[in-house]
Amino acid sequence: MTTIARKIQMVDLIGQYQKIQKEVDDAVLNVIRSSAYINGPEVKSFKAELEAYLKVKHVIPCANGTDALQIAMMALGLKPGDEVITADFTYVATAEVIALLGLKPVLVDVYPDTFDINVEAIEKAITPNTKAIVPVHLFGQCADMERILAVAKKHNLFVIEDTAQAIGADYTFSDGRVAKAGTMGDVGCTSFFPSKNLGCFGDGGAMYTNSDDLAAKMQMIANHGQSVQYYHDSIGVNSRLDSIQAAILRIKLRHLDNYAAARNKAADYYDKAFAGHPKLKTPKRAKNTNHVFHQYTLQLSGADRSALKDFLAKKEIPMMIYYPVPLHLQKAYLDPRYKQGDFPVTEQLCSSVFSLPMHTELDEETLKYITDSVKEFLK
Ligand SMILES: *Cc1c(COP(=O)(O)O)cnc(C)c1O
Image 1 (cartoon, rainbow, N blue to C red):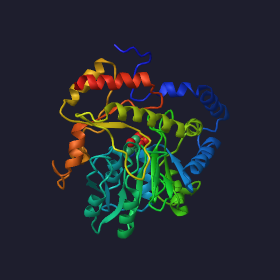
Image 2: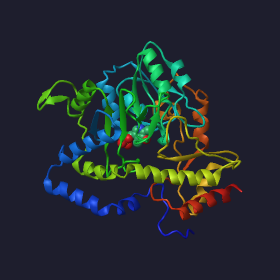
Image 3: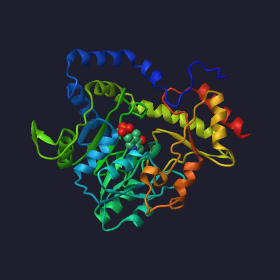
Image 4: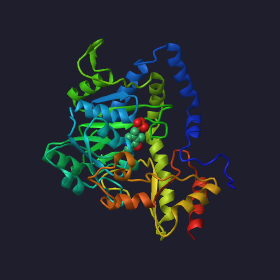
């Protein structure tokens, strides 16, 4: 049995909330008392504050990260049959919206050490029908954006960054220019799902762009395709961030860099504790990007992963598998173009990765208990 007072969780949302409770409670009550529940001043302020934080011209809040991806693809004018390249190793939402819009998801493998989309594989997958690339900044660090943007430019493709897991991460170009994840391509799409690095207390999401034209289109699509009330210029959707969520996000945005620092501190502890372990491969920090550790994901070899999960569960330590099945082997995405063995890196990762608790409230005592327990099983 654990000696630790609070139950260990993958993400400790209560612990994080308690530290900002008074401020959050007041902000939520203020919205309730104001009755400006939709598109109120909190949403406008959050939008402006996130634009300033990201140094991006436009942030368009919406209802969730999946909607953000969908609205971005609609605004870019992608048409049924257009091919969109994305990673086989990702959360399903990325490919889901591609398929939902009648576009053709074209999957490519990832790099085995950083889990990022493989840029050589992107180039090989390009055909005359390719219209866009969706790099996923998986687990909290940026894909190799400089090379991806070069490929996109050469082939005249849109780049939609799925930055649901990497809000706040910085990417450094070879000329020294630094940009936030999601602000480098045509559009960046993020999620404020509670367990994301900047999470609200429900669903939320946003698109980012530096293009005035795209911003206007996304704003319009997110609001039933209307630019003037009751005049509908395009078919849109209903996708809004609630004022209550915006009020919470404004407070948490001020802590985001500290949250990332706390996550990095935990990751450093894990790295050190597992360094050189013959059965464990710690996550590699990619070049040109810092890591905001949405997840701390290891690769296991020479041991049974589900037995490790059971062993840890008995010690009340959760572990998760992100992700157990490659997209091309998911029932909904089976396609005669793809078969088992086509994406060997992703397939290998899906059978070997596991993620340990990662959040802003991990203390050394807990980290020691977790890492000692993992090592005890692997002895
Ligand atoms: C969470 C997530 C999404 C979707 O965000 P929701 O707000 O849950 O719709 C999309 N892509 C990735 C990589 C994610 O992790």
